[in-house]
Length: 379
Image (cartoon, rainbow, N blue to C red; front, side):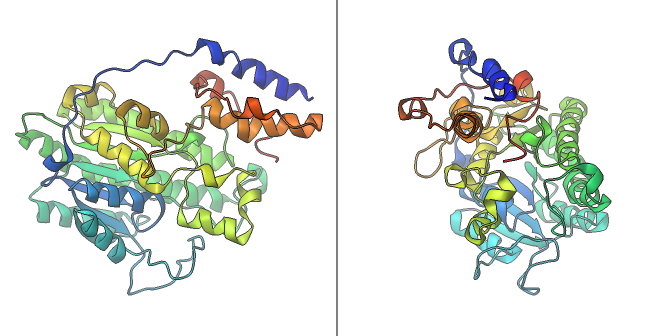
């Protein structure tokens, strides 16, 4: 067996006996008190953004769904990944889904790569809502389709950096910049005795903590994490909270189509998408955080939160009642990385009694951030 696998196991396995799970009481409000609350979600026509928007609608929000895809311009845009035929992934369809779920859907065409488009959208939203804005979710992200996501930085074009960190990092900053004054005004006007603070949420990924895909991707995600932390520091005195969410492996429309097309294994490193999270699962996390009382939410403002770990703390599940493991849980890491490496190197299968009895212990961030698991970027 290669040394790298043994070394990684030596660090991971001691957490079996050392991890202590704690919980604290949280002050939360019920969803029927959300009827006057307003949310904005970027990148809302597809993927995680769509799932978030619909879940906010289910919780009773008026949701402004911002995206580029519209029924007036059918078909894929130049940088959008393929999805199954017949799917209506537009601002109009997500607005309808939000309303059908119990909220009020407002679809808006916005090009997140254009500052004036973002600014114009928030001016209109502020006018329509009387200056109220309770939740903003920055979910818009894209990668270039012209080259593989995995690769050495010196072999990738500058387009990888520009695309990942244009719509990913820059548009998140631009969105937060124009949203912040409206959210500060909302916090000042708030007369809800429970005092739920306005919440600015940035969707990031584990690539902000550990090597994932390529250099440009990881730098962009780490930048989003730090940006939310520093914004949280500046916004705290105005009563506005920030958070960063790490979804796990997500069953987006594009990822599911990659499985159908036979390209998923190479792109993901043979990860099992069937065990992944739904896009709506991240939406449930945001609804739960936005329902926290002011003290509980402000105490954790600026933090990185893992969706699967929040599910256990704040007690929400997938629609089928399941809770997928966190990507830094042994329950995820061992089957996806360590066991395959052992089996490949030894030529023998890991016994079923081990595979079926993996504890859901979390690897400390210091260990998780030390680098990719064995063979993670070459399988």
